[in-house]
Amino acid sequence: MNESIEQWCAKRSILEIEALMPDMAGVARGKVMPRNRYCHDLGLNLPEALILQTVSGDYPEDWSAVDPSDRDMVLRPDESTIRLVPWATEPTAQIIHDCFHADGTPVETTSRYVLRRVLDLYREHGWQPIVAPELEFYLVKRNEDADYPLEPPVGRSGQVERGRQSFGIDILNEYDPLVDDIYNFCEKQEIELGTLSHETGVAQLEINLSHGDPLLLADQAFVFKRTVREAARRHGICATFMAKPMEREPGSAMHLHQSVVDIATGENVFATEDGAKTRLFHSHIGGLQNYLPAAMSFLAPNVNSYRRITKYFAAPINLQWGIDNRTAGLRVPLAKSVSTRVENRVAGADANPYLAIAASLACGLLGMIEERQPTAAIEGSAYKMPYGLPLSLAESLRLLGECPPLTSMLGERFVHAWNAVKECELHTFSQVISSWEREFLLRNV
Image (cartoon, rainbow, N blue to C red; front, side, top):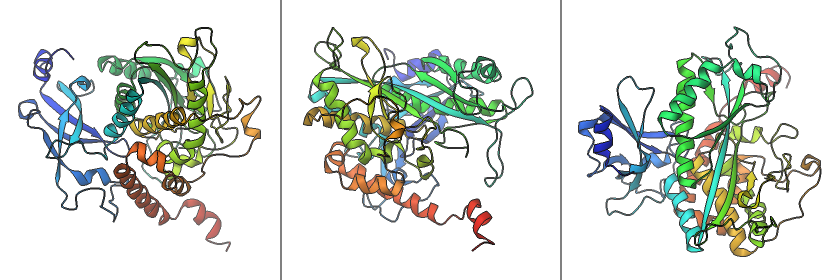
C-alpha cells in the first residue's frame, strides 16, 4: 500500500476500525474502536492466552505454550491488509494484525506467523510458492435448535432445492440476490473471485479465489468466509463452512492448488518448457504423500471434519495422485507448463486457511528437501484402493506427535499449543451425548 493507514482512512471518511487477528480456528478476534482511538504506532493489546481459546470458548489445562501470567500481546497492523467493511452501517475499515511480545519478537503460536515461517523456509532455498484456494460452503435455513438437522433455504422462486444439481445454472440462479451481495462485498474488499458454481450437495456452492502469494490468499480466504456469512445473514439464512453439515450430503472442501516458482528466474520449477514434470515436482508430491497424514489435523481440525472423508462423496480417502483425477487426494490438473500445479483435495472448508496452507506447503517442501519419490500416478478410481488418511482427530494428533520433521518446520511451540487446544476440544466433545445415541441406545441396550 502506497499510502499510510491515516491517509487511506481519511480518503474514505472512515469512522471506525476493526482490528483483527485470526485465532487457532481461523475465527476473527480483536477489538473495534473509533478511528480517533486507533493508535497503531503504539500497538493494541490482547491477552496471549487468547491463542489457546478453543472453538467452543474453553481453555485447555496445559498453558505451557504461553506465558503463565497471561501477559498481553502487542498487535501491529499489516498495512497491506486494510479493507472496507462493506456491510457496516457507517464507514468502517478492517485491518489484519500480527502479534508480538513486549520485546518485539513475534508470537510464534499465531496462525499468520506459522505461515510466514514456512514461506521464509521456501525463500531460503530460492523458491516462492503460489497457491489458489477453492472454497465450498452450504446455504441453510436458520436453525435455532442444534438437535435438529440443517435444511436448505427457500430460493428466489419460493421453493426449497431438492435433489442434487451439480453445476446446475438454473438452481444457482435461485440464490442470485445473495450471490450478487457476495460479489459486491468482495469487490469492495479487493478480493478477486474466480468462477462460481453449484456443487454436488443441496444448496452447496463453490467459489474459487485467484492464485497468488500464500499469505495474501490466506488473508483473502479469512476475510471471504466472514463475508459469505454476513451476506447470508442479510438474506435471513445462514452460510456454513462446516466440513460435513448434512448427513446425506457431500462435505465441503477447501481445495488448495499449489506450485513453486524460482525466485531468480520466475519460472515454475514443476515443469520444463516442453511440459515435462521435473524432479522437484515429483519430490513435492512425495513429500505430500509422506507427511500429510501427520499434518491432517491442520487440514481437518474438528471432530466433524472426518465425517467428510467418505468414499464416493467427492472427498479423497487416500493420498494417491493422478493426472486430472478427482478421486485422488492429490490431483494434477491438465495445464500448460507455466501453470503446472498440484491440487491438494484433502483440506476441509472448516480449516484455518493460514494453517492449512502452511501445513500443505510444509509437507511439499520437506519432500523437495529430502528428494522423496512419490508412488506411481494412479489410473482409474482411487476409491478402489484402501483408506490412507487418519479417520479421527485423535489419530491425526497422534501422527503429528510422531513426526519431528513437520513439528520442527511449523515450530515446536506452536505445535505444542495446537495439540493443547485440540485435545481440549476432543475432551469437550467426548462429553456430548448425541441424538443417535438417544435414538438407538436409550431403549435397546
